[in-house]
Every structure is written in structure tokens, then in C-alpha cells.
Image 1 (cartoon, rainbow, N blue to C red):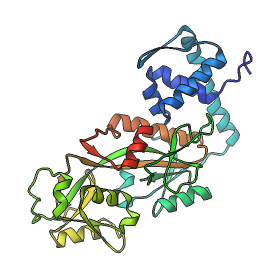
Image 2 (cartoon, rainbow, N blue to C red; image 1 turned 180 degrees about the horizontal axis):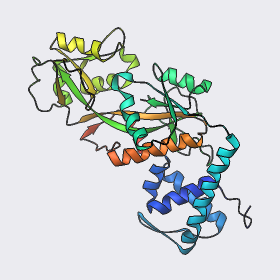
Image 3 (cartoon, rainbow, N blue to C red; image 1 turned 135 degrees about the vertical axis):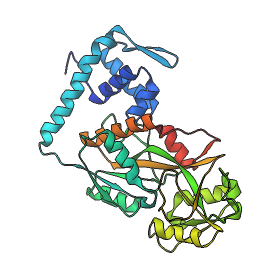
Image 4 (cartoon, rainbow, N blue to C red; image 1 turned 45 degrees about the vertical axis):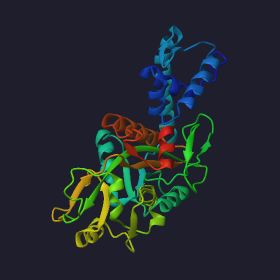
Length: 340
């Protein structure tokens, strides 16, 4: 208690982010909150302190005199809080992160983020799919998961106060328990892979609707591949699936053997040198594959640091750019994007 004010570190963190960004939207994205949640935290802090910390003018904000005086002590309080957590836990261990969606190369994204934040101690593992990752999170054998979270079009929101875990406005995915939260961190454009003899192989770029005469070859049953199922349904493309997902090389065998078949793969995923296939960008719209982080309950300081590292890398590499009409996302992924 300081002057009859019980300082809330979650509210102080929201203030510091807004003070450094001078923009509530950017500050909210930095903290993986909705703008409404960030504004509520700052309003509660101002109410507790009995002073205004910001001048608000439309979308722009400026610090008041009280805000300028409060900024550095607030930063010091946050640093002290992190030290207190570290001291209480005493023994540190690497953050345990499992990935799924192996065909689309999730490690490419993690390598980029961890390369930008080399001080983070992370131990990487593999889950077979989203349900396996959820089970590992529930059992506590991992701290976070990274892959595509299948969310419903109608989102549920969870609020447990201003703690470190699930924040106000966080959305949960289809079939996930309320203690689980996820945050979209990358939108990756997909290209179409075709046999050189395919009628469209000579094009410089293609529209998804032009693939209606082709067969979309999928690595596993469509009821397990939410994105490809939605893509095929949206653009009226016939889809067939392999009996089992055996990896990239076996997936490419079908379009290599039969020019009617095509595959969707991330734009920067390298094909084997001897693949003998054409890769053509998709436009009007460009399909985007959504990657998310998934966690359960409250995160440790290293988990929070990983979330911030993702946010910084995403901003620098423009991973979350989405333009309606130019790009395509399933409705549920659009809902996730609005929460970022």
C-alpha cells in the first residue's frame, strides 16, 4: 500500500506500454490485449491514483504532468516485480514449447523469433496435432504450443482480472477449455504447387477460383485439416486426401505423378531441389495461414518474454498484415485477428 493505493502491476504495465507507444492500439497489441482491455486497466489505475495520466485527443494520447512523473517509478516497479517472481521461483528452467503443423514448417517462424531474442531459454518439442498439444498443456508437460488453433466463428471471451494469464477479450478455440488462451502471431501467404504440365503452370500468378478444375491434394483427412477444408469449400475446389500425413516428399508425389493435382504450401517453404514442380503465387485473394501461440493459465516471466518477442518480430517483419479483399482468411481467423 502506497498512500492508500494498492498498486496493480498489470495496470502499471498497461500504462508503461501506452506511455512508450503514445497509442493505445499499439500498446494493446504489444501486451496481447484488446484495446478495450488496455483502456480499462489504465482507467482503473487513474481512478486509484486520483489523477489523469493521459490527455486523450481522438486516436492520439499525451502524458500529463502526473503521467510523466509516474512513468519511471512505474518502470522500476515492473522491474522489481519481475525480480521478485524470479527470486521466489529460485530455480529456472527452459520454457517448454511444442509445435504442430509440421508439414508447413513451424520451426521456420520460431527460428526467426528466437534469433531475434537469443537470451530466451526455450526447449522445443513436437506434438502430433492441436488435440495432442492441448493434452500436453493440460497435463503441464509443456508451457506453450505453437501452431494453427481451430477457432469457432462465434468467439467466447474469458476475463480473469488483470493477471498475467488470459486477459480480457482473449478468445478460446473450438473445444478448448476456458483456462486455455491463444494469440494469433503470424499470417503466412500460401502458394500453389503444380506439375509443369498442368494447364495453369505457365501463369505468373493465379486466383484461387482458377483452381476449380484441379484437385487439391491434402496430406490427411479433411476433417483434421481445418484450413484446407475451409479453403476448398470457399472457392469450390475438389479436394482429396492421402491416407496419412507422411511429410512433404510423399505429399508432392501425387502432383508430380498426375498434373490434375495441386498442393498449397507456404510461400517461403523450400521445395526439394529435384521436386520438378512449379510454384505459383495465389492472388485476388491470397490465402493466409494463421499461426498462433497457445497456453494455459498464467505464464511465467519467460513465457511473457516469448510473447513480447513474437510481437516485436511480427511488427518488424509485417507478419500480421491483412487486407480484406486482397487476402483471404477463414472467418474464425479473422475474428482472432481482430483480438490482436
